[in-house]
Structure formats: C-alpha cells, structure tokens
Amino acid sequence: DVKVTQSSRYLVKRTGEKVFLECVQDMDHENMFWYRQDPGLGLRLIYFSYDVKMKEKGDIPEGYSVSREKKERFSLILESASTNQTSMYLCASSGQAYEQYFGPGTRLTVT
Amino acid sequence: SQQGEEDPQALSIQEGENATMNCSYKTSINNLQWYRQNSGRGLVHLILIRSNEREKHSGRLRVTLDTSKKSSSLLITASRAADTASYFCATSSSGSEKLVFGKGTKLTVNP
Image 1 (cartoon, each protein chain N blue to C red):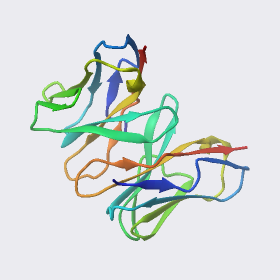
Image 2 (tube, one colour):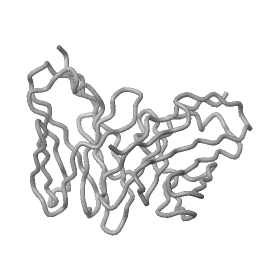
Image 3 (cartoon, chains in turn orange, yellow):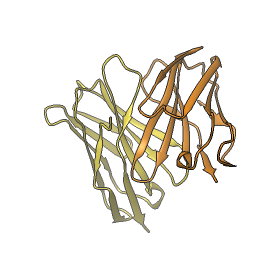
Image 4 (cartoon, one colour):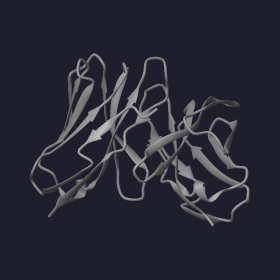
C-alpha cells in the first residue's frame, strides 16, 4: 500500500515564524503536491513537483515555497507565517496513473 | 481555477438508501476522479473514469460521465453509516498531472 506521511498532525506557530511542513512517500512516485483546505473553499493547490529539484506553482503559491531534494520528500515552507495561513495542509503523491495518494493532513494554527 | 462543482453541498439519508452526488466542470478533461474524506483526515481515492468512458462500477459505487454536458455523478448504493464523509470530484486535463478539486458534498448516513 502507498503510504504518505506528514511530519505533524497539529502545529501551532506564532506570526512571523518560519514553518516547515514535511511530507514523505514510500512508492517512488514522481509527482508530489501540496494543498491547503479551507471551509467553503475546498482544496487549492499551492505547489507541485514532478521530479527532484523541479517545482511548479499552483493556484495559491504566494507566501509559500517548497523544496524537493530527494524523490521521496517534499517540504512546504512558510517563510514568515501569518494568521491567514491557518489551515489544513494536505500532501499527496502520484505515479504514472493519475490517482493521488494523500497524507493525513497537518492542521496548522498561526497565532 | 476551481473546475468541479459538486451538488448538493450536503446530503442526509437513512442507512440502506442510495446517495447520488453530482459534479459539473467547465473545460475539457482527460479523466475525472472521485475522492472521499472522513472528518479531519486525508482524502482517499475512490474511482477514476476516463473521458472516453461513460460508466464505471466499483463495489457499491457507480460513476457516470457525460462529456457533452460536462458532468458526472457518483451513486453509492445501499449506504451505510460508515459512508458518512465528504466526497470530492477532481478533474485532470490532458497532459497535466494536476487535479482540480471541487468543494465537495458532505454526506451523512443516519443509522
């Protein structure tokens, strides 16, 4: 079974802090994705990566950056956290098929 | 760039009844997928239907796709309390690994 893990289920950070969200997949998938999910807005794509060191902006990249140094790991970075980045963050991966496999999510609160 | 829109936003039924959810989208697609999300968790892939397919079955799930109307439906037959979750449609365009998600239908199955 594909397993996608995220470093934290719950995270509380202060405004202005640098925040790292880590995602690891164990199926040698080429593609990895970061979404945020907010009530009434559904899932919105922040960034995705189709190979090591390759990345593309999604629909809402402002305030975020990403890093993919190894195939199995995709990190989302909030350079200076703000309260409007309080959200559920979901990581996913996919291989040659189109279906995506999701991690359990990280609920981030920025105070 | 929200693509899919699910209808209804919320649905409440009794155990044993069938549940039907609809999804409409705006542009040409390569495939359409349905995902389930239990409260506060990651999404789980349910079924994928390609643009050249009209109907697909998986267990108690039946998905239809009408590309002329740019719409899809998900039918869950003989529903169970464990089917209580949010259901999302997601579309993929040709040549893209990205998925665009709708806002979801929240299904409640009452015992």
